[in-house]
Image (cartoon, rainbow over all chains, first blue to last red; front, side, top):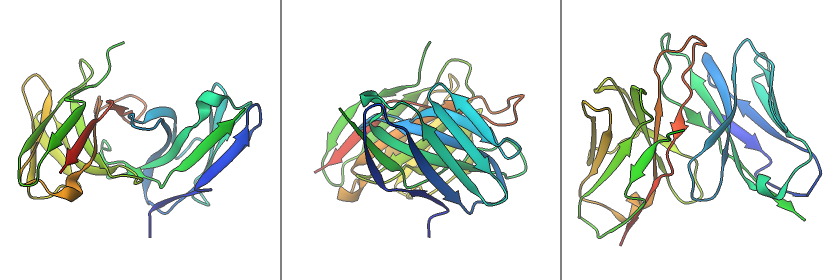
Length: 115
Length: 116
């Protein structure tokens, strides 16, 4: 069973609409949770990073939330654009007691924004 | 701003051959990470280096080895290549210690390895 699971697996929305992607994780203890956007064949690009003590963070049209008690996070995309079409990956960094290194990647949600 | 550079961007090899992938981190970044992403899969952590020493090890096969050099660039050496090694290989770099308590990893564009 994956330590970081995302839903839905894929999503199609119309341009201008909002959407919310979900992430459930079992990694514990964890240091921080990140959302990445990955275009096909490109490297992941960081959207937000939240530590366990933060419960929301925004980056333009992207807003991430975190509930460390229920081990859930969401990424809300507002007023979607065609360029938002990509894979969105939830990534958790375990807390090894020091500076964290390894990232545990979620299964990703493939978002397609249609005109 | 300078980003993580990986070379080559594409590589085609035959089974049992060797391959070397290179990664040049963002200037002043001291930590390098390697990830393997198979078709339709999420990236899997292979190995990381901090100040030229291996700092963490993931699912890196014994046929692979890596090192970080004095200029902080890193190389991933892959021997006895198998068909299943065909994947996108990402390198990421970061500053290990940050005031925020976490280190943001910046990913390179990846090297697409195809094993025939």
